[in-house]
Length: 276
Image 1 (cartoon, rainbow, N blue to C red):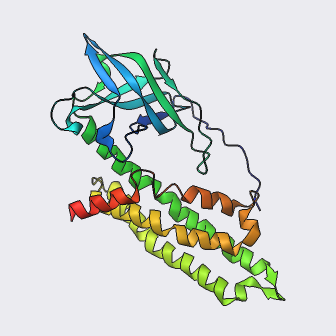
Image 2 (image 1 turned 90 degrees about the horizontal axis):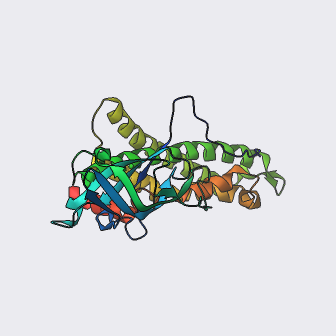
Image 3 (image 1 turned 180 degrees about the vertical axis):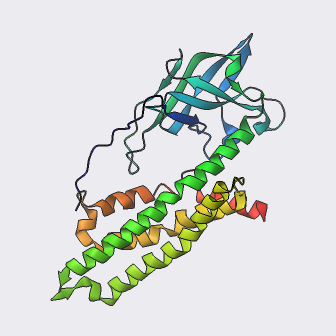
């Protein structure tokens, strides 16, 4: 059993926290459906709209926000990206969400109410936003999967330790075949998932661009298939796995985000089938 500590972000001098304002209440998987507008007036842009479920939003010093600057052509053609600093008039963050899991990741809405920013805060050119967003989302998919590997290493270690300590019917539960099979399943998943994650990390170390197909396959596999081994660890701990004092229930809650964050599993299948 481990003692929980309240998480408080700490930064070194000169560092800052950023966030990406992309998702909206009506534009999650369908990024091109975003409704936040940016209208150019002279040498300024005026933004109106809101973003939802934005990581780091309550504590961010700067945001890269995506807004529609044109309604001409295809839906994704008119999306642009802007840099907006904390304290800008008309720019605010909503109340921090109390989430089921990933509670050390601060999340809230971003709100733009006649938010005026200089035209020089436009990233690239008007209409470049969609391609920028897709590059960022692919990077996001390649990083959100790594904690699952770490989580499964943790789950395997905890399950082995606990099953040896817990006794039922006069012997350790680790001696029961059902428990042995659950532990084996955790190990099998871990050995399959680890090289997928490492391959993407290796590509980044070599300076290669993220491979959309590999990122989607890895995100889908870890997102959907990790639920079983982590649930196995949860069950091995019995009623204690359900208690807040034990870390397994936190891991169980945190893992439920992966099938929906950074693009749902259904979206990953669409990406895979399209690229194939």
